[in-house]
Image (cartoon, rainbow, N blue to C red):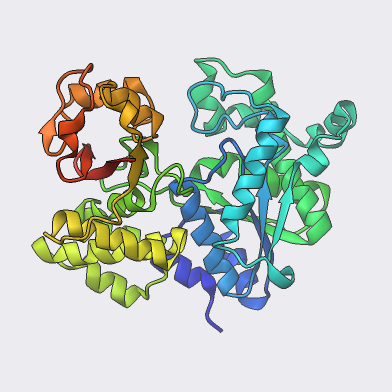
Length: 406
């Protein structure tokens, strides 16, 4: 029987194991329940979460059962991992709204039917805990000296680490223990920035329940220079089409560096590895064919085939001399907006996230209307901008929007 671990390794997912040999043996001999945690700090997943969803989907396709754990409880505290400052505190209402939004997105990637996967929220067991009982029951298994040596805390000690955040590791470790006891969960998967927290969970299950517990981390999605991928002119590359349009999402992958194409195809699509390697080996102008396949496949997974086709057609219309501009992301404004500052119109219609970001774009020569660079912050939108029936806004190198008049 093929071991899913071989596929995950071949595609480049695995970064670290807590117990490599035992993990291989476990995945070979039985179908396990495993989990990945997602803290609902926003009302959408972004591309950094997408690689975790793909990790989970490969495991499910091999017959293992995923638990998607939404951190309705841990989001009340905030994970210090990878953060130089304390996260913004969210209210219970904001967290619940984010949980509801993320649930819908997950169903596109994971099959939750017939108990094939579970969706649970750690608020169900964390928010009702008695603090003293928790310290006596769980805190006794954690060494403060060991915690302070963890990478997620070390980088924060100089700038200041709140006691609130210091509790996060105990809470994540306790999550694994609860899932182990309630659902027989034996493994935690997650991004490599979660390594310290994941070790804490494995050790708690082994000490407190004398149970089998393992963890594997996934490589973070970085480019060939080692920088995190998924940042755009408008901020994060979101999976919610209202935050990042399918066209902008498609264009992001269409424009990745040549050196990153093979890695992205391996991690973010289900294409067979022979095909991934063939496409990744293309050179010069030919690599554009691979980028178009990458953009189409990733957009299809996130937004569906119809939206992927529309984005592909719009991209060809803009960059290959095609005539059909109908699928370029479009907003409609009323005629009484003529004479209004362009930046105000762009912010109001969410084409740029803020006036400050719009001004930064103008300063860098990255904003144009109908091919003409905008140089004046006070530039207004007027009737002459709509000679072709629409104004074509370009942000950065290859991000386009159309504005039409009602």
